[in-house]
Amino acid sequence: MATMHVDRAGRGPFPRFKPLAMAAQAMGAIPPSAQVLLGIVSVQVGAALAKNLFAVVGSTGTVALRLLFAALVLLLLWRPSLRMSRRAWTVVVSYGVVLGTMNLCFYLALDRIPLGIAVTIEFLGPLAVALAGSRRWLDAFWALLAAGGVVLLMEGRGDLDLVGFLFALAAAACWGTYILLSAALGRHTSEGNGLAIGMVVATVVAVPFGIAESGTALFQPWVLIVGLGVALLSSVIPYSLELEALRKIPPRVFGILMSLEPAVAALVGLLVLQESLHMLQWVAVLSVVVASAGATRSARPEA
Image (cartoon, rainbow, N blue to C red; front, side, top):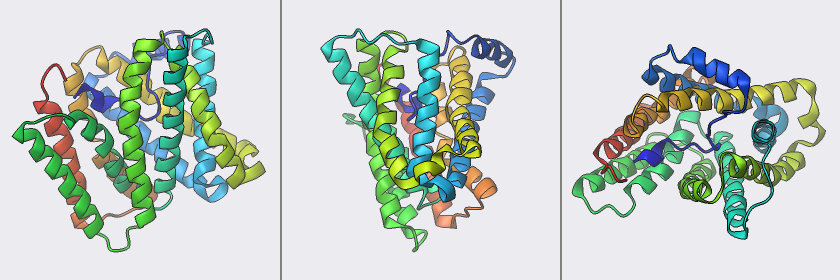
């Protein structure tokens, strides 16, 4: 289940950027498991920071800022070539459209439901990809456990916004598709070319929605600074940490550690955003965490 660690923002190495290379050397002293956990915390704190922007630029405006800054960083780092085959362009454009749609759906969900619940539902996407095609009873158990967690999420809080739930479910479907397209991107493009261009496509998908919702509010200096902070916390910092960790630990171990992300999201939501969950919802989050970790742990090596 190595695909479980693939992230919705296009995680990838940044070997051409010397400051990040120097930072990676400094990170070498941190144990790899701690690097993964720090990366997870960074992503979720970035999401919490993004949610604080919603009152000013809305959820789609925040997505536009995050993807725009991420695209600028990737273009600076990779300086991609536009000379690709037609098949490669098809994959890159598809990847970018799905990436942009996934971010829009996730942030629209985040605007309506707590961070921990949104991440838990979205995490069903990579879990479904990991379990797809399996005929083992154990994997069926993990799938049922995750499904039970979703039912508890709905039952544990009567006022859970249905539209937010559906947006999170759409983000989960996009994340699963994104993982499959990421594999194709690696086969049809070299280094970070496809990733950088795909991020530009994702930005083109999201920016019109952001401008329509927020208008000139997007261009306030302090909003741009916070947007850059969201991009750094949600992209550059965790990518660097995870890249360094993957040099030292097997992908399966990495996937098990990443399974903690829904629980970390719930904790960050509680501590940073004061989003409390009911007891049944905590049980639901832990059910998805256990299902993800179990599916990763029991996956066949060739998966």
